[in-house]
Length: 245
Image: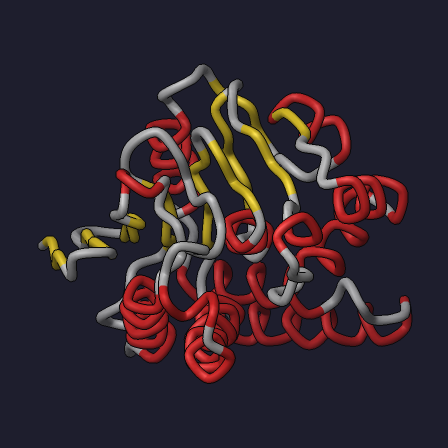
């Protein structure tokens, strides 16, 4: 089943769902309408009952790019109250992504810039075509990142890479990103979605409760000290063991 909301398309059926950012003429720039629709779909997926939800979600973009970041041509860019409204949808997207109870994969072609990079880094795995480019251009357009890019980059790639991308606006390639841990797998151009679908299909063979536990561990343990992280893992271990006893 496909739900076309204009700037976002949700494709459901079987174990894998696909959310497609659908503004290819603007490199899928993040307008208020797109963010609102995206937050709504993610919220529904996050709250779906175990029997009704997929086992994996793919986030991708229509056309040549994943997402070029905030739409600076939208009226909201020059009006603080409208920008605040757009930001509320933006933060709702990341909140819902964190609550999705199964793995989320980003399939990236072309640009993943600014908020687009933040969306990709909020996913559990990033799969990118070889010509994909990742960057943080915010300082050059009178803004700073607001969706966790710096935190995510420092966790994935370290302070040096985060500082270089933030302070200089330098873009890095998919292959360089893979070397730093920003990208998890590099594919041929045009095949990121197909590769992500293959990976998601293999992940979906696992039992749903195990996928939920794995997603929670990835998202919730990185900021913990070792003792707390082991405690979190131990809790999920006992839950899995009890269900199979």
